[in-house]
Image (cartoon, rainbow, N blue to C red; front, side, top):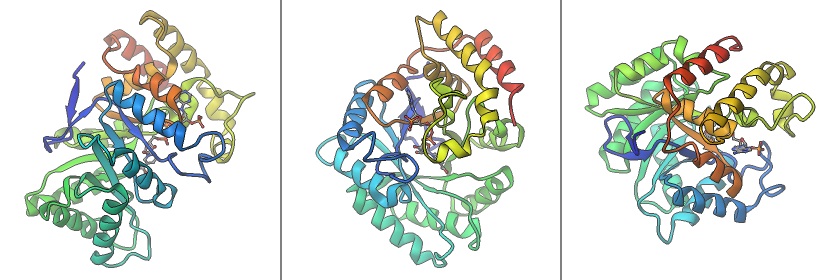
Length: 312
Ligand SMILES: NC(=O)c1ccc[n+]([C@@H]2O[C@H](COP(=O)([O-])OP(=O)(O)OC[C@H]3O[C@@H](n4cnc5c(N)ncnc54)[C@H](OP(=O)(O)O)[C@@H]3O)[C@@H](O)[C@H]2O)c1
């Protein structure tokens, strides 16, 4: 397996697995401060780097900016070699290009960086058309405030529109960050994967563990706590049980890899960069065990077949 992967045509080389940091500082959805603290995150961060990860994804919206602040603190003394991705949120009250520039400057301040490596538009929310924000991304790139630009949650038609803006500016689109895991393979069917592959846009796979389901630790009698309990319809947990069993038995063939490690390796084998969310050292260590080995073609096909039957 490739040691490092280029983010599109950006020349930025990242590990095949990234770490997602939505939970770093987020109290309402993930419960930061209750079952995990800054010390847990610090340990997760250190072990991830030790095990070969150099790519961390955050956003101004995560924890109301706290995720970026935590990363800023973690990288302040050294670790200048890491690749940090953040995102601009097109809140409906943000109507001016100046709002974009202000948001970017605030992110830079929280991250204690002069340049963000990868800056992304978080969602294609109205009322401002995607073209305006993508054009602002191009400005930021040409002004040296970020080293590569990306989008997130764009469908194929929106990617096409972003590309047409960027081709006029001569700026490459490095990434599209979208949901992708064994329980959600919509991008394979709706044209997103194809348009990204055709244009050398790297897909960053978010929620690669289906927010914990693919770890195998949740089931009908042990559903996740908090908001996820209501989002995960019992059907999803029911549907995933055969898949979890297969992840376990496949993992055994590779020296005892866990369901999480097999699920993340499957995403890597599909040419995406999964960004797994972690809350502590144990989760980070386990997920980093998805690096430096590869599922066989037969096992990928087997997982494809089992997961095809349980797609929404
Ligand atoms: N662009 C977007 O719109 C968007 C949307 C969503 C996410 N993202 C990005 O993608 C990242 C990852 O997605 P995600 O956080 O939604 O979901 P995920 O990576 O599929 O799942 C993360 C959660 O699963 C559990 N977990 C992870 N590894 C584990 C392990 N080895 N053993 C046991 N439990 C484990 C943890 O929660 P528990 O311990 O509480 O179960 C963790 O917070 C985010 O952090 C964010 O950077 C982007």
